[in-house]
Image (cartoon, rainbow, N blue to C red; front, top):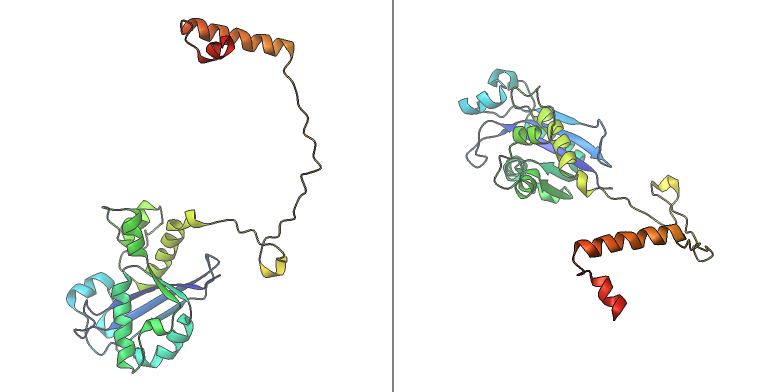
Amino acid sequence: MTRQIVLDTETTGLSAEGGDRIIELGCVELFNRKLTGNNLHFYFNPGRDSHEDALKVHGISNEFLRDKPKFAELAPDILEYLKDAEVIIHNAAFDVGFLNKELELTGRPPLKTYVGSVTDTLAMAKEMFPGKRNSLDALCDRLEVDNSGRTLHGALLDAELLADVYINMTRGQDALLVIDDTDDSAGGISVAAIDLSALVLPVLPASEQEVASHADVLTQIDKASNGKTIWRKFQTA
């Protein structure tokens, strides 16, 4: 099974190219569609203040971030954690754009170089629920995921909520995999073949009473249709 990482960021603003930076990264790990508890969560000193509108969204003060490490210091740990995984992000273009800019500033290639793939749950939701609101909060409400603790955006909390949303969105894709010649240690399901050729199935004919009851029902239907029943035509042909 593919290792999956559900990822979210908080930023100083909306434009990575305009100089905004990541201030928080939250990741939760899924393996076999189960939370493993192997999470990753960092705050960063962005080297600039957050925009006022961004502060209203995430509530992470500039003062709180002053003594936090720079993204560049933690980049090796982040990339090792994400290595070869399927990364699941809501509105992936936004977060990936910021991660690519942070990696560029450290002299590294873009995120796609390190991960297996990126899945955008916003694109999935638009396809599943066209014409509806598909924000994380809206999806939580629609899929009955408890987001009552989400008063402000937080990267780790949002990643945890998104993991629950993703599992609910893809629940119908689960399939029973039958794998031949696989032992239990490999995590597969082994099904023994059964030879049905030797089975003799008994034929149970209808009793005289059942035949008479059936004929009576057909007669009643024929009378109700004024003799237009099809089986009578075949009987007289």
